[in-house]
Image (cartoon, rainbow, N blue to C red; front, side, top):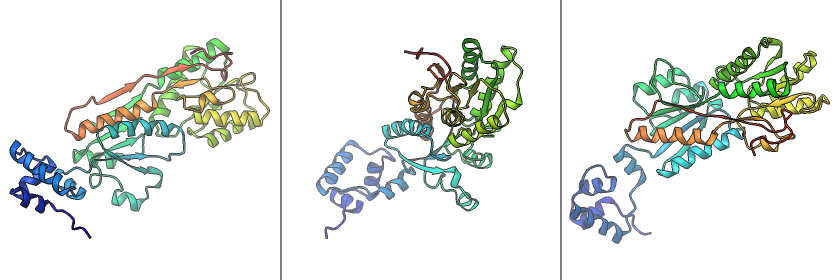
Length: 340
């Protein structure tokens, strides 16, 4: 078998110290132009390939970004991942993903992702608790939050979207254009910041149109297709009247449509349905879904961009709030896509 070429072999043939060759390979310190050319010529001649682990030790970088997510079942996360991977590849970073739903006390204790195997971490929503965020902040370890703001006692950069005004426009459209007065609302997961602001937008629209908030019209959809289907069935079984549903997100809107059809109700003739995010499925549901377009892929891209800047020791904007927009299709009662 062919002998593996070592850094010592390169140094010997170049007539230089191993430390000088190491500095050139790992770019950890300046090397003269003459020595750099001499080292590179020997590397090319010997077909030397630096040992990846040694490079990591020398540079103190893994060239890996960690991503902590909940379950990846929704198509929402596909777009988010595209944004993250696009930006990571630009600077040759590898992406290491771990699902927060399978973090047990045992895995939490050994910290599946952290300073031992990544150069920085992106955290989606409430996938990491404040205790661990505080520990990483105390280490000055790069962390960026997506779809949640930094805890008030920490100073962690974040990328979020505009939820409240978007939902206000959406619910106001149901009221003003379609005359809806009894709008059911499917809440998102508890402790989820997007869910909080979407409910705030729903309540604001009702208040502005002098429609009393009715807790009987509120159920938990949890941004989940099946949970939303069961939530709408509960409303129907309680004989609660409603003329529209704001489902919280597009997955929940899809589940809401299933429940309505199972009950023999027509969309939008009997009940209008609207969502949030404008996922790929939204335009292909029957009828096509009126929703709020969220810049899902851009959130992932910008969060990764912030993280890489932090890893490189650069300053970043602490809070980025990306705009959303109303997308009108047929599920609310409009006869055509008003955005075409």
